[in-house]
Length: 130
Image 1: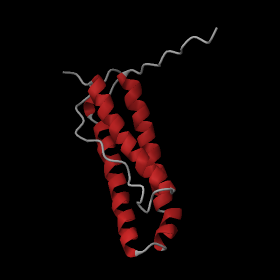
Image 2: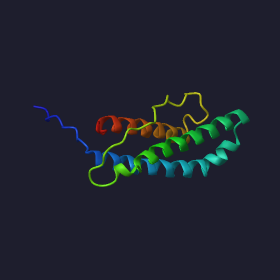
Image 3: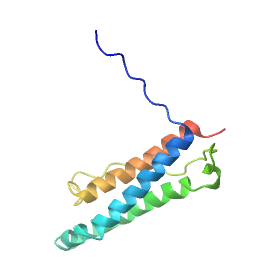
């Protein structure tokens, strides 16, 4: 006999929002640490077009994280039983495989920022009050 199937843990809206908040803050810390640290020296070795692509994606990462954080900090999300608000962000395509950040820690950060944006969309669709 095999093991019984594990039940998926069902999160409450509060748990989902709190977890997304913590991961968004962590992603922001990772972005700052890499783009202002090792990524800065790495970027200097790139040609001008690649440097521009990296800078543009860095701004996009910041924008994604700000959109998610702004939504998370909506007053209706405060308290034990939040009233989940509509989320205005929209999922984005993955970072192209030939992007200069692909295969770097910056690429992983870009992917995580896209995932957080998608999760905010999912949380809003699952828990939003009519």
